[in-house]
Each structure stands twice: as structure tokens, then as C-alpha cells.
Amino acid sequence: YDREEDHGTASIHTFAIQVVPTYQQKIIGPIRRQPLGSRHLVGLWKYYCSYRQWNLMDAEFLMKDVHRLLAYVALDLRGELDTAQRTILGKRPFDREFVLPDYQTIARGFVRLTPWLKRIEEEKQQQKKEEKQRKKDAEDVVSDDADIRKTKKESLDEDRGEGVDKDDNTTDIDAEKSDEDVDSEDETDDQRRKRLLKLKAEEERRQREIEAERQTLMVSVERFTIPEVIFQPSDAGLEKKMASLPRVIVSAIELCPSIYQSALYETIRIVGGACLLPNLKERLYRELRQLAPTNCDLKLDFASDPVNDAWINAQSWLEETSFDQWSLSRDDFEGLLVSNRSNKACHKLLEREHGRII
Picture 1 (cartoon, rainbow, N blue to C red):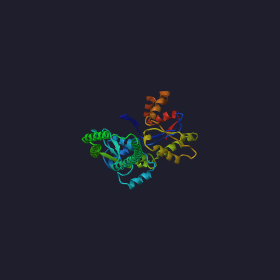
Picture 2 (cartoon, one colour; picture 1 turned 90 degrees about the vertical axis):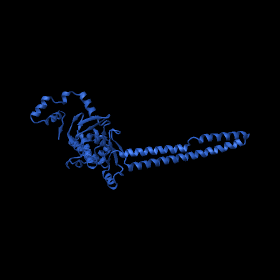
Picture 3 (cartoon, one colour; picture 1 turned 45 degrees about the vertical axis):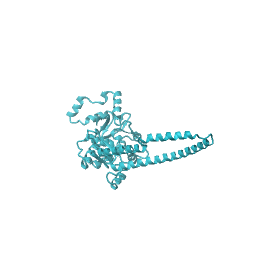
Picture 4 (cartoon, rainbow, N blue to C red; picture 1 turned 90 degrees about the horizontal axis):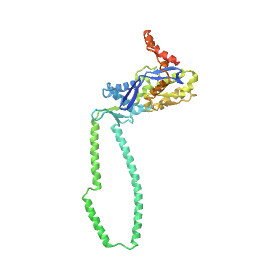
């Protein structure tokens, strides 16, 4: 694989998925391989998006962002496809727009809702806001009623007292009138509110015009049909006999000694950038449960840092072992090349750990 770091994020783009059964840091069975990786998925993104909308065959860095931000594994593929068939483009719940960068105002693309879904979301937010406001108004009414009753009670108590001085009342009324004259010259709260609403509407209109001028990439069923090739490799143009990831895992375990198989089903650890796909763990567990023996417990463990987990563990392993124990000398390797048995180099390395490749 190749490891790339960009803008503080790291991603691993593999050419294949490998299943390695190990026990106490030793390979105990054959290594199975599925020739699909993140690079193949990004290639499918380039092909489908270029065929339907923009020519993005040379924009691999953009497709990596699209794959990272939008791809997910469908838990109900048939249901998602039925929804896509019944609903027009732009109104499907999984439709999104990827805003392409223009490198003037936008340095990196981002995801946004389609206009229809955005309108629906705004209506939902408005309904929630109105419901919240109604509850608040109801609480205020109850509070006002209590204040009115309290005020009436206080006024009755004052009337029963010494009375009110008429001259003082006249002076207070004149003062209130003078204050109203001063306030009338300023902007009222209602006028201020209307002015602010007008400015907000104008700003929203300008923002909509700017967004309408941006180039966008409409992404729909590609969000889940492209990652689906992990479970159905024939969708990527591979041979129909090519096994899916769950079948590759089960095949690798079944070829190990029977004494280890039950323990291997309970300690399946997944590493790599593919772990970042939403719903992958749930879908993989469901597929494996259908293939694994019923008398075996099944547990999946996803690394907390899937992108760097393999490198971190390899580093710790290298610190504990000698370099000569797992490496080949240059003379040995060149000798294998001369004897036209270069593929035996990795076999020799694995045989030291009691492993083999099928």
C-alpha cells in the first residue's frame, strides 16, 4: 500500500485486502487475498462520475475526498435500490451534492444537501422552532396570569391604605408622556425587527446566488453501490468466481488447523482505511454469521486507529525482534532472481514463520 498525508489527515490506499490467520505472532494458515482495495474503489468513483457528469479521470485527489466523505455500506441494498427506482434524482434521502473546489474561494470540496432535501430540512427545523415557541408562549401566559393576579391583589391592598396623592399622579403622568415623546423619535422594536429581517433575507438571497454558480457533483446510488463490490466483486468487473470479503475470511479460517478455528472466529481484527466506511462492521458481522459455524462465537474488533494500527504494531514488533530473523540478504534475493524463482523469496520468509501462500 501507499500512505499519503494531506492537510493533517492520513489515508491508506491499498491494492488488495489480505486475510492473515495468526496465533501468538505466528502465521498458522494460508494467507488469502481479495484483489480489491481503496484504490480500486476510487477508480470506480472516477469511472462512474466521469461517465455521468464531469470528466474526473485525472482528479484522483478529488475522488479520494468524495469516497472518504460520502461512501457507506448499505445494510439493506435491495431497499436502497427500490428507493432509488421510485424516487427521482435529487429527492432521494441519500442524494448529496459535492461542491467542487474553484481554488479561489474554495480550497477543498465539501458536501451539502440537494435543494429539495435542504428545503425539507429547513421546514423540519422551522416546525421544531415553532413548536418550541408555542411551548414557551404557553409558559409565558401562565406566568402572566400569575403576575396579573398578584398585581390586582397589591392594588386592592393599596386602596385600603392611606390613598393616593392626586398632584403626584398628575406629575407622574406628565413625566410618562414626555418619555413617550422622546421614545417616538427613535426606532421602535417592530421597525428594528423588520429592518433586520430584510437584511437577513437579502444576505440569504446573495448566498443562494453564490451557491447556484458553484460547480457541483451530484452523488446518488454511487454512495453505496461502489463499496458494495467488497461483498460482490463481480460488480467491479472481476470474475464471478471471485470470493467476497466474508467468504475470504471464512475460507482462511477453515484452512487452518481445527484446534484454532473457534478462537480465530472470536478474534477477527480489521485494520486499514476500509474500517472508516460507515456500517461496515454491522454488514460484515451479518454476512460472517451466515457463513460461520453455528457452534462458534463470532466477534469483530475494529482498530481504534485503523489507518495507522498496522504500522504501529509492526513498529512494536520490530523493536522486539532482530532484523535478521525476518529479512533476506541482498545476495539471497539476487540469487533467487537469477534462478528465476523470485516469487520464492516471500515464500522463504513465510516458511520461517510456518506460513504459506495460496
